[in-house]
Amino acid sequence: MPTSWPIGKRSLREGRSFAGVAEEHLDDVYRYLIYVTGNPQLAEELAAETFERALRRWRRFDPRRASARTWLCQLARTTALDHFRSERRRRRREEAFALETAEAAEAAFGEGLAPELDAALRGLSAAEREVVALRVVLELDGETTARVLGIRPTAVSTRLSRALQKLEERMVSDVRS
Amino acid sequence: MSEARFEDVMRELRAAAPTAPDALRERVRALPQPGARRQLRLRPMLAAAAVIALGIGIGAAAIGGFRDQASGPRSASSGASAARERVLTKKTPQGAFLPRRSFQGLQGNPAQRDFGALSKAAPDALAPGGRLQRYETTMQLRVKDLSEATKSAIRTTRALDGYVASADYGTAGSTGDSTLDLRIPIQRVQQAIASFSELGTILSQHISVADLQAQVDTVDRRLAAARATIARLEAKPSLTPVEQIRLAEAKRTARSLRRSRSGLVQQGTYASVSLLLTTRKAAAEPASPGRFDRFWDNASDILGKELIAVLYALIVIGPFALLAAAALLAERARRRRADHRLLEEAG
Image 1 (cartoon, rainbow over the protein chains, first blue to last red):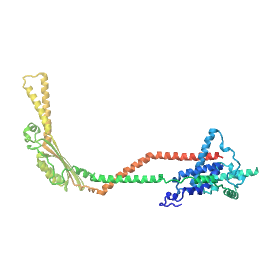
Image 2: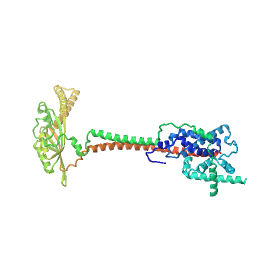
Image 3: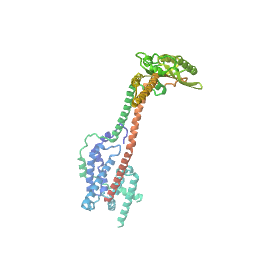
Image 4: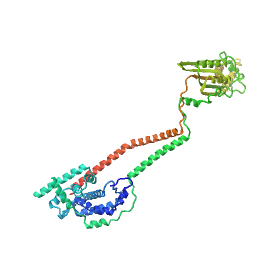
């Protein structure tokens, strides 16, 4: 990413249109949200909302501070968190646990995924899945993942390690059962 | 998880990574393009504000420097300059200011002069139209030979029918000072000052003239009233006890008033001349600051005050700013923990 003074973020941003950025990173945002929510329909809804937010904030996006993908993942995370907060409030009001509604046992995390791996992923929390999505599926480095999650890189490594350990434990227990 | 197993899981997850459904893709493509809109950024605004504030501060200092420079040079604060401010004339051999009306008509040896007789004959002793005045002058001179100059000043004083009220003479090595408190008949003070001016270089001179005539007139009026009372009571063949007391009181008053008049007349008879003779070299006068020096002095004063004001603001605002920053960081940390708990709870 160029950082010399004469090239401002406006010219960097305008070199890439919003539509182009959205098309390029749509799959990444969708994958991330699937791992966070564990629900393809919800992920689709939140992805659309993420890009609507991105459109409104496009002028504030500074490519010198972070890549478009990082920025969109941050927005997607915020969108997901807002959804979870509103769901929690709704649950408290209605004393119903909407996310416990059993969905059809479709492969939420991708077609062709081994059933035990899919089940193990479902057994992880959203926080554990999101770090797996960012580091493994989207292949973001530790620094970038830390920026998306708002934590230190060492914390990212710790969370990923725990998530993978838990994943393995679930897979092993699933195989035994 | 072993390395190999981790690699397998990674490959599997990546291979199976879902793609966005067509409906979502169409929905995102349908979003309108963002319009052109100016955005204000905090950092450039802060940088511009800092530059503007700095420019205003420097400009104010420069304007203050030019404005104060236009009001003229500052007066030096040294003792010599302060003394010079009191000088009424430049150093000239005969540059003293003199009383406009001299007291004329007094003669005789001052040691033997009867001021009481003079006060009684006051109306005749005063020159017609003349007013009684107190004349005081101080002169400071640098002389080459202190001893000779002191003796010369004393000789001159006595030659002019004056006298030395006090003398203080002291030397230390090659330098010395002499302080003479002289009394010169007021009609000869001009001569005295001219003579003293020739003893050396005048360093400073101060003259003070005060009118005493009004006081003398008041005393005369009261004295006349007391005398009239005395004359009236003494003319009576016999006096009542009250009248006797009044007579005694009038005589006491008359005596007191005569003494006061004598004192006033004495003040107006002789001029008081304080002569300060010194052999010390004058301290080098500080060079008058040039225009640039004055400008820089004034501008740096203003800059200094601005820096003090900024420092004061930082000291006052600093703790609050630190508290606000700490509160902000604490809130962010709390929010992060809350988000993580939320994601942990979500399945």
